[in-house]
Image 1: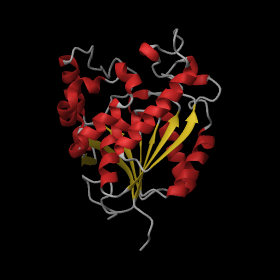
Image 2 (image 1 turned 90 degrees about the vertical axis):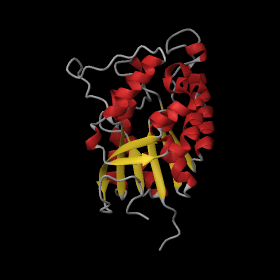
Image 3 (image 1 turned 120 degrees about the vertical axis):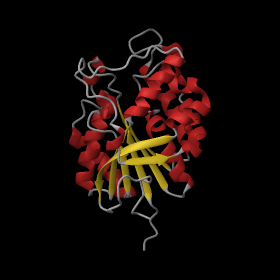
Image 4 (image 1 turned 180 degrees about the vertical axis):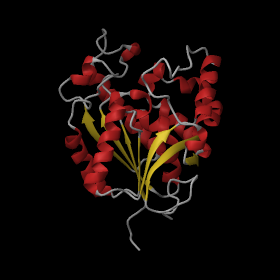
Amino acid sequence: MTDRPLTLMAVHAHPDDEATGTGGVLARYAAEGIRTVLVTCTDGACGDGPGGAKPGEEGHDPAAVAAMRRQELEASCEILKVSHLEMLDYGDSGMMGWAANDAPGSFWKTPVDEAAARLAELMRQYRPDVVVTYDENGFYGHPDHIQANRITTRALELAGTAPKVYWTTAPRTMMARFGEVLRELGADWEEPDPEASEMPEIGLPDEEITTWVDATAFGGQKFDALAAHASQGENIFFLKMGKEKFTDLMGVETFLRVHDTTGAPLPETDLFAGLR
C-alpha cells in the first residue's frame, strides 16, 4: 500500500477548456477525494478582449487578455475544487492558419520534445493514475489542442506511461442534440458535412465510446466554472441554456480509453475503474 493519493491529470490547451470537456470529472473526482491536477498549456492571449475584441482589433491587448484569463482560470479551478493548477504559459496559437501559429513562443511552434519534457517533469512529480487530453485532431482541429495531444503522448513516453490514458470525445447523438439546442437558442449552427470538409468528423459513434462518466450531480459546478470565464462569453453558447438544460446535455462526460494496464472491462463508467 502507498500513501500517495489516486491522481487525475487533465492536460488542456487554454483557460476554459477544463470546464467544457472535463469540468464534470474534475468536480466529481475531487469530491471523491481524488487529487486533481490541471495542466493548462497556453496563456489564452488569442481569446476575446473587452467587448469581444478579437486579436488584431482595436481594444485587444494580448497581455491584458492573458492576465484576465488566468484570473478566470483560477476562479474556475476553485469552483471545481482542482487540487493543483500548473500553467506551461506558452503563447496561444490562435485558430489554424492564423499568423499567431508561427509567432515566437507560440505553443504550435514549440518543438514537441521541448514542451513534452516540461510536462513529463510534472508527471514525475504528481505520478498520475489517469491522464486525460484530446484526441489526435484536438477534438475539432485547433492547433493548440492538437499540440496538447502530441506533447502528452510524448511526455508519457518520457515519464513512463500512466496506468490509464483517455482522450476526450463526444457521442454523435449528443452532437446532434447540441445542434438542436443551439438552433433553439437562435445560434447560427450548421451541421458539418464531413464529405465537404478536410476535417475529421467531430466525436465518435456512440458504440465506439469506451467510457461514460455520470457527473450530472456536478452539473451546477461545471456550469459555474464555465461562467467564471466571463470574458469569453460570446463564444460560450452553453451558458445560454441555463443550468438545467446544460446539465441534461453536458452532465455525462465521455472518453476514449487509449491505454490501460488494469484490465477493467469496457464499456466503463469510471475513469478509475480497476484502480480502486
